[in-house]
Image (cartoon, rainbow over all chains, first blue to last red; front, side, top):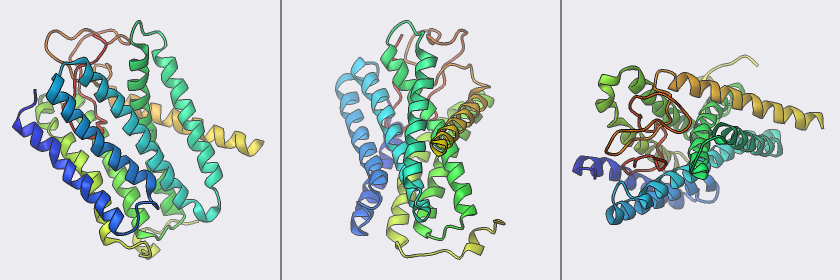
Length: 232
Length: 72
């Protein structure tokens, strides 16, 4: 069972998730950024559910194991849709939402097929293997898509401050997790130190989104030169 | 039709890029996927041979301690 320090780190994130939802509601951004808020709400519910199951059944129970991994996969899919919705906002003026949806759907199906091909020879618990594999593959797809969206924002000289803030924070969030994991593999002696980082990184996204909803009005614009100048 | 094919091609390109990145990130690990382990010796994951400790997942969504893999 986790100690008090782990519990504190775990539930440090919860107030930020609540804050992100409240800020979105107060600033009337709940429906406009529906998938982002859906992800935050789902993350909040998953945290509470995990705590409840952990408290009742214990860390090694099947109930907790299955709830943890399946809820993780669902959250990754929610995050994928949140990212897709950000693509829709950025490409809205090009009237390319249809193509964005098609790419997102193709990518999801492609990732599912790839994950299936990876785990199809597993001997048992095929569904669980598939869910975990899909979750991690979708994570890396999200990482690449976020970098592509960063590049698109620079190229198209996107000026909506709130959208830029939401996309940048998502990119930082994905990158920090990947970097922490890679560092832990590269420097195993530091792994105990690096293990404390993921719960802190998990707090970053709702915190950044809460800031974006509360402090940055929908009409706020950045001067393109301050963002970057990329030759067209 | 060709536009739709281009879109699908782009999607596949992103998928290839993502899987390459995943390979780069996990390349210095033991290659096993991702999960923390509970008590007792950890068996190799069903889709990978070789030993070594299993690292926790880097892509945690939400809080909560990571449980052991469900396919022991």
